[in-house]
Image 1: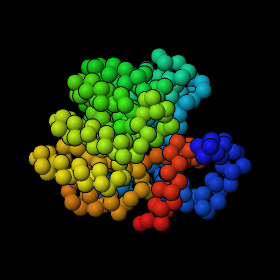
Image 2: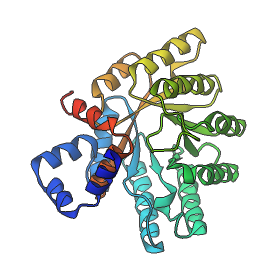
Image 3: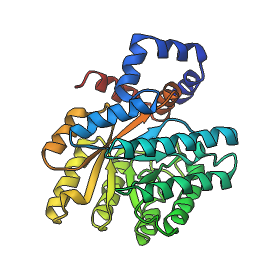
Length: 308
């Protein structure tokens, strides 16, 4: 019921206009979204880089409805890669296949993302494209797509994907990705999935996250651990020390505006941190859908509005 409520809010044009024009709306978006333009993402990335953290830039949007929208989305990502190079940013990009037109024309999406990965690979230093994970109807298609991209000559170090710890299939998916040396961002997962395919209890999800995290950390491949959970972060640190895993062989990943105190503390301790920075005009529906996907985020965001 609560999820449906937030989905309804995401489609409410009057509330969207109010949120985007009021001081509170700007406060919320300014805390968690860089802005609406590439220049905003560059400015925020530069600020984050100066604190010793790297960045993943994401232009908000998904499920485009026609080829022109998909081409425009890809064009914007080409501009982001140009901006990363021109401003010498310590940043990569994160994108969704449905934003590249997967639902409209699969070949178009493949061509567009392949072009972006090729461009990232040719950058100096080499860039990186993270193909984000969406709901379960897209899981296998996304993984197949990433495997194919990774096998293309020159792409090996420039493309990776995301695994969601709450999916029961994730251990098997990780084994296949590691067999080909593909970099992974491990997250808990936020989409609403049926119990037939996803773990429901928080303790079970956390336990599976830690189990998969240890596999990634010992793989010898550079991965990202996406979490704000201090217990899991401490577990990763303890495991790294016990197994003599170098601090620069993996990174913690967190959202822009969430637990900035924790991010900075990790950097001071010598751990690598990457901040996920979203930007774009679609911040309001994005924000509401994120709340709807996981209602606990309502309280999480409210707490973090009061944090440093």
